[in-house]
Length: 528
Image 1 (tube, rainbow, N blue to C red):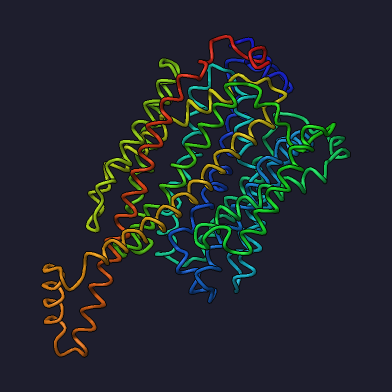
Image 2 (image 1 turned 180 degrees about the horizontal axis):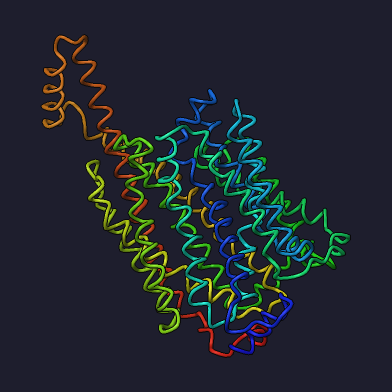
């Protein structure tokens, strides 16, 4: 792999890559990693504080959900575009534009006074900030020698998985200490520092502005229609019975037509907006599948835990953040260990073990009750954090480690897109399962909890006695009993969702047998 490392370094920097990484380059890369951390963090930083944002902007529950949806749609469109823009503008200029735009739109999000403004600036924030994510992945594999990957890869993997995991924790603390406005204002000073640091230190490659003359606007429109409408359908479908809703059905048609136009264009255009030839590399294709599937668990668990804690346990944003911190701590502690393992252990075994450990974490949650609290969630969250790190870091190496340098920037965008799309699909599936299975369990419990059920009657009588003298005691007792039935049905819906995730990740772990292990000395030649 040393020969490949030299090729990678020389193609993307002025001087050949050596075993010693210059301090300037290391500092520049760390600044870029922090920028990527901010961009990914902002996907989930609002998740535990949506009720406060809703109240502050006088928005409905449906409207406030677009604070996340707008960001995700814009980010999904921009991520694959980053490959072309990185080649045209160069790493330095693209990253600086992304960081500056992300910072400015974050400031505007904090100043908004109504939900329409918030949705607009969140979309701008997601679109401009998205360029920082794949640029970091591409820079790691094209700048650093292969001998440094055991240090660099865990750092990137940690950021990519830790940021969305601790998003609710960070958001909960900020909202509790000050207000939801500071979820966005907190980005301003670091964003300015990142922009200036990148402009001063990054010198990984040179821009090729001539590429902009061949920018494929039709391909970009088709890609935006394809990915944007797909994200909309996945976000909105579960709560509106999918295509029974007119807007979801219309966006579904837009998605189908745009998909055909997009793939026709990228396969026939002289300079396509996205080069999908990277998928011809078997390891990249399989690594992207794993990235998609890990994204389901990464974003799905970051959604389902806070929802359970808020809906069933009645936690506020700070309490949710404190509970979710366990997974982030497990990831942080596991990263250096997993990094050292990548040089000594077959990555296929690591991925398989990671997926099985993740399945163990979801299997433990299949026994969930309405009394599950911080301590009951500790071990499932520890196993979740460890499993994701064990799976994600070697997946990065397998997918990107054998590609030739000229495909790296574009492939990095595609690879990161698969993780985000996996998250979108995961959220849609989890929401669908929760909605459908909760309705099923409510129906079944209603059939059981009736006047012929001695336990139900006994509980109703006890509740009626408790509310004596406080109004219509029997009506109040019936309301509390109805709430408990619905709560138990919801808890059983959560258990079903965790059970399906367990089966899914056990089955996925078998897929590692078709992965070809990257061999020492593999590189650009192997990718063809």
